[in-house]
Structure formats: structure tokens, C-alpha cells
Amino acid sequence: MKKFLPSLYFILIVSIFYYPNWTVIDPKAQHWFHLSVINSIYIFYIIFFEKESILKVFESNIFKSILGFLLISCISATYAINYIESIVKITDIYVLTSSVLIVLYFSLYKKVNWNTLLYIILISLILDLTGSIYQIIQIVPYEEFSFKYSNAIKSIYGNKNIAAMVFMMKIPICLILLFRSNNIILRSIITLIITLAFYIILLLSSRTAFLAIIFSIVFVFCMLFLKRMILKQKIKSDLRQYSFFILPLIVAFIFFKFSINQSDEISIENRVSSIVINENDQSTSERFRFYSQAITYISSNPLLGCGIGNWKLLSIKYDSKTMYSYVVPYFAHNDFLEIFAETGFFGFLTYLLFFFFLFKEILKHTLLWLKSKGDFLSLFLMICLMYYIIDANLNFPLDRPTIQVPLLFLIAFVYSIKNYHVK
Image (cartoon, rainbow, N blue to C red):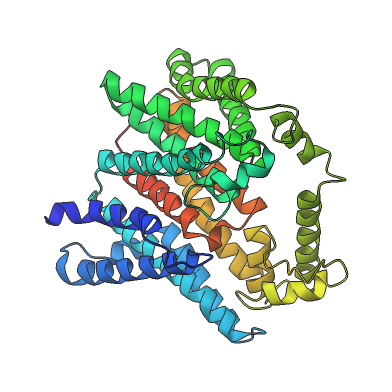
């Protein structure tokens, strides 16, 4: 039973999204609450019933950075415009910090079973896709699917952007399970699920997801070029493994082209072009406006900020002249800029270091792969991190447990990887 408890933790933190939502409009508070209860129980268990010392986690740079971010956030609450909003946000950051603590503890002491984590992600992706498929079935028999229905197939998530990025972050992890399995039936099922996931992502029509796919493809081909042309290493097996990502995407794209009316706004060409040509696109222009407002405030208050969780109040002042129908910006739509505006340079630095140390750890394994001393899976871990960083620069994943939980799985894989893939 004791050996099963680490795996149970990951099962529990994924299952919180499938609980009844108590009829609330936005279930994120419920998710944070459930996560806090689970974390409290597990921290108590680790301190009093586990033999290994939890202090080892405090020695890791990634935990020092997230802990530093929590402490600076607490300090910023002392001079915040509204300290109640700060307390609400600090509780979320505390839950995330305690989650990282637990995940690192289980990972550093090798208490995490890789296959169990991979199957948890696979099952959760199947459940997510089932929700989207059910919602599609409610539409297609009665009306042709079009762009106006994109947000209606978001499965259990708050909106289509969140749903698309959750699917995106789970796909590379499912591919790792595919490569670790020799069962042809399982590999075929995973390939089918990934193809379906890409098709749903295309239907969701999230430009963040499209941008993430484009960047990841360019990144992988650049890495393959570097390995083959510069380092003179063989890449045949790498191309074969990467084909399990590209081919499902191509199949999904072809099926999308033939099954959906391409004259509608939902066409990929229209969605991608709207990223570049954005004069008439309200969503894109709003994001640029929010970014410039945050940068303007940061330039005048670089050290302290307005207090954690308080940008939603200060943004009213900056957006008052362009605000339509009293719709408050609420978020800067960029976690890094928002944190800089709220906690100042030092809060921004500690949060940035959190991702730097995670990136650095993945980079170690990627460099081994470049020298043909490691497996291709390190690139899938890098892609997963890339998806999160892109989302953090365009949306606000720090506010959403639905995005934080896949990130916790990524941390578990990275810090328990060590000798899993070294040849």
C-alpha cells in the first residue's frame, strides 16, 4: 500500500477536474481547494511516515525558486492596493508550491512509477476527448459545425484555449508511453487517440495551440538539422519516432479539411493569418494593449509592483479609456508580465528561474540525445515545456489548475528521468 501512495497522489490531482462542479460558473476555486486538501494530507504523511528527509527537496534549485516566489508574493501583499485579493492569490501560489514539494519528493527519491504516470495521462486524455466528442454529437446532427461552435466543444474545461493547451501538453507525454510499449495494440490505440486529439484541437481553433504546434515543429527540425549536419550523428531512428507526432497531425489535418466547411472562419489559414494580420482582430489587439499597459506600469515601478493579485484592479485605470461596456481586463494575458507588474523585479526573477531550472534539467538530457547518448523522449519533454511557456506568454495558465497539473507531471518526469533513457 505504501508503494502505491505516490501514484495515488497523481491519480488524485488529475481526478479533481472530473468531480461535480457544484454548479459554479468557474470551477477553478474548487480545483485549488481540492488540490490544497490533497496536498495537506500528503505533506503530513511525508513528514511523519516517510523515512527519507523532505529537506532534500529544499536543496533543489527549482524548489528554491518557487519558494522564493511565494515569499516575495507574501511581502508584496503588505503594500498591495487590496490585500484580500493578494491573500486569494497567495493561497493559489502556496498550493502550487506545496504540489511542487510533493512531486519533487517522490521524484528525487525514485518513488514515482513512470508507467503509472503515463497511463494516468493517457486515461485523462481519453476522458477529455470523450467530453468533446459528446459535445460534438450534440451539434453535428442538427447543424453544420462552424467557428461559432468551437467554444462549445471544450470538454470539461473553462474555454477552448484551456482545453486545447491541456490536450497539447498531454500529447507528448502519451507519445512517451507509445515508445516505451512493445504492445502493438496499445501503440495503435495511442496513435488513434493522438490523431483524434489533434483533430479536436483543430476544431477548437485555438490560435495559441496552432502557434505552439508551429513552433514545436520548427524546433524539432532545427534540432534534427543540428544533430545530423553539425554533429554528424545519425537521425534515422529519431525521424521514425517523430513521425508518430507528425503523421497523426497530418491525418487529422486532412480529415479536418474534408469534414469541415473551409469557407468559414474556422479554417486554419484564417486563424493563422489572423495572428500575423491583426488590424481587425479584437482578441489580438486587446492582448497587445494589455501587454503595453503592463510594460508601462513596470517601467515606472520596476522594483516593488502593485502587490500580488492586484493587477486586475490596477488594469482598470490603464484600460479605462478603451474599456468597452465595463469589461475589465482582469489579466495581462501574459503571466510573466503580470507577475513583474505585481511583485516587481525580484518576484519576476524567482518565477523566471523556476522555469529556467526546469529547462536546464531537460536541456541536459537533450544534449545527451544530440550526442546519440540519449533517447528522443527528451525532445518531447522539451516540447511539453515549450507549450506551457507559449501559453504563459499569451494567456494566464498560473491561474488555472487545469494547466498546472500537467506541468506537475512534467516536473515529475524530468526529475525522475536521470538514468531512464541514457544508453
